Amino acid sequence: MPRQVKGEPYTRVTVDEARDMLKKGRAVVVDVRRPDEYTQGHVKGAVWVPVDEVIPRFDELPTEGKLLFICAMGARSGLACEYAAAMGADTSRLYNIDEGTQAWIDKGFPTSHGNEK
Image (cartoon, rainbow, N blue to C red; front, side, top):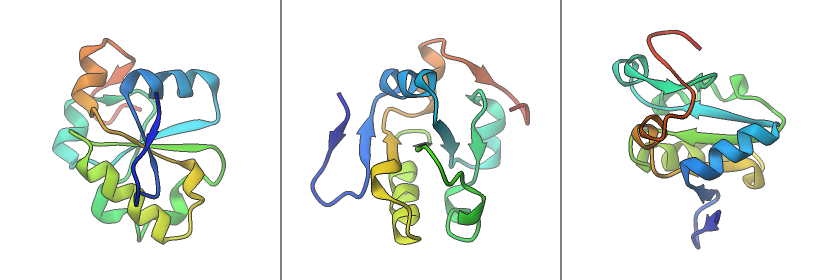
């Protein structure tokens, strides 16, 4: 069940919850890992914006729907949510997939490799 932690401007979700949100539409995954991590495997259709580029590239993020940030274990994606909130994103749109990309891949959910979307 999605959960809010006091003081965090985003909601934490599992990979199962994130997949359900994507299936319902109006949501996009934002992968914030390093280039080498991204090319090894990422959520199919994810937007790739490394965590250090979230603030300067904030205007490239979708302005509608839910933003589901993902990294390897949930720390960088949480930070990315914080950056997006600081840039003025509606916090009700911000989600941290706190289990990370490997959990997504291990569940057999749609995955791409290399620079493929």
